[in-house]
Image (cartoon, rainbow, N blue to C red):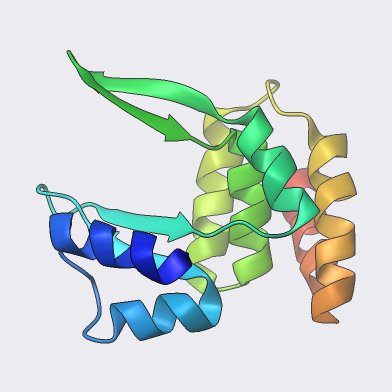
Length: 134
């Protein structure tokens, strides 16, 4: 089913990599671009966390008649921290700055902890604690 959806999306949005379909089937993330060359990361959810993230998502209106369902700021932090790339940590800092006082930090740790344990990279939680403490 993911292959069918990925193929449909690739037919409407330019992929950000030549092997976008194969990459999405391996990683469950499809990397596309919109008409303004903004990166779109589409995750094919399968884990309980992803199901909860979908339930927490909201619609965001970009322009009249153009609405996109987006994840919560908390879930975006979880995704970015889990990816554990330098640019993602920079994004986490930006989200924390922009959403100061509005985030459910306990939810972030509650959802991230089992993912980090599954990935066997506990240092991710340590990095996040340093960032949220400052």
